[in-house]
Length: 162
Image 1 (cartoon, rainbow, N blue to C red):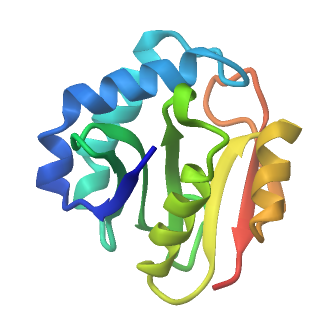
Image 2 (image 1 turned 60 degrees about the vertical axis):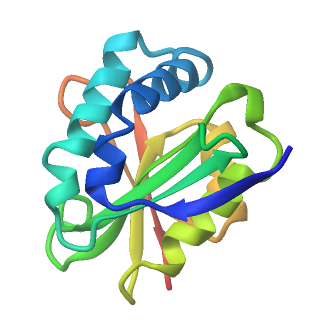
C-alpha cells in the first residue's frame, strides 16, 4: 500500500473531523485502550479545540492514494507535563487498526518530532508494556507515572531529548 505523509495546518485538520472521529474510535476501542466511542469524541474535540491554538501546534497525517486518513500524529508546546519549562508535548499518535504494524506510526512519530521546537519532548501514555516498550525503542524514557483526574489506570510520562 502506498501512502504519503503530509503536515496539516489546524484548519485542514478541522476539515477532516469526521475522519478523525472514525479513526480514533477504531483505534481506541480495542486493546490496550478499550475506550468507548465517547473517548474518541473527547480526543478529537480537544485536538481541534484548545490544542490547535497552542504554541507550536503541529500535525502530520498519513494519507492513502485517495487522500483517506490512515493515521496522524499531533503535538504542541506546553507546560502540562513538564510542570514548569515549556516542552514539546507529543500528544497523539493514532493509526487505523488495519494499517498498524507497517511502520506508519514510526514515520508519523519521526516526522512530527522533526518539526518540533528544539529541546526535550514529553508524552503521556497508558502505562502498559505494549506502549511504553514501543516508545522506549524510539528513544523515550519513563520519567514519571501519574493517574490523571478520575482515571483508574496509570499513565507513564516519557521524555525524549531532541
